[in-house]
Length: 347
Image (cartoon, rainbow, N blue to C red; front, side, top):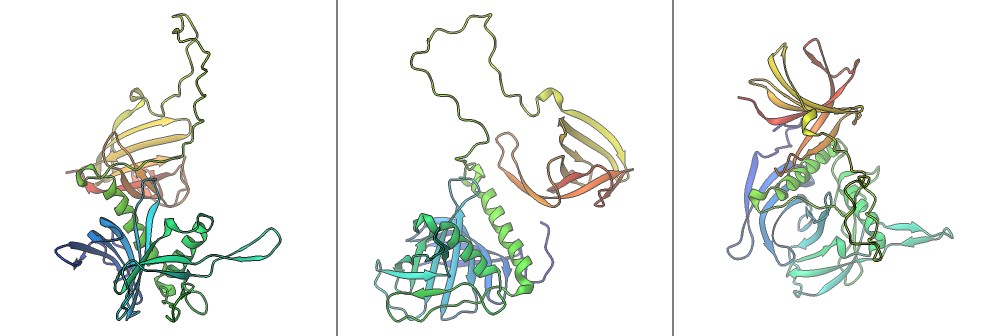
């Protein structure tokens, strides 16, 4: 694993265990421990809201006796996450199943007439005597974008004066909560840790070995097929009829090229295919990391998900590089590749 700068980003090194009521057991893996928030993956958690699941959690660390937690678990739609907000306060004695209205953040819109429209409060349900939770997907669908931005910006973006995240309790006499966001110097490293946690979570969810399956997408870049004509003949076309157009595969098996070249670091095997201005390939040499490269698609640093046959998806970061005279460089004076390095090396 590539470690990021900063002594608080602990990646997969910090591990712990957490106990829920009864015999339930869960494992925690910390990605970043800050002064006000921590980012961790929780595996095997069991509660009344979610059942047994694995999720990325962003949780306050210095807000006692109160606690705010945002929990993200993979949804059925590729690239989306089921998000739960949990509020806990030691000393609360709440009846399980009761509900409370809570305004989260400052949600506003402008109507066509220029009037300011304020977002409605969220409904939280008490799941234990000191904890209440809500599923973001259950919120008003017209305000899902705004509430999503309010949560992420409220945690990771420190404004000039204070944090933008707030919880105002409409019912009862509980004072408003204003947890402090990450410090400005923490914003970049904490955001990277959060994205890494989500990336690892998606890979785990798609791994059949762990009971997962590849995500599905409700969208497609292709035109929908034309509806069948009820009056059309069911007789198959004649043999000499004109063949229908077929989508041309990006990389037919016959177009892959194999080559061995002598580089500064030793003999290197190359496997690549090309279509138009787009090239996709892999290279490997003994004692070095496997490398995938793409030319003609990306600009600058990027992150890509690789799918090979029916194997689990693999997510890796890419950087623009060029190879000239056996030397790898990031100056990109000539034709550049986007280089993706795998986690394992060739023996």
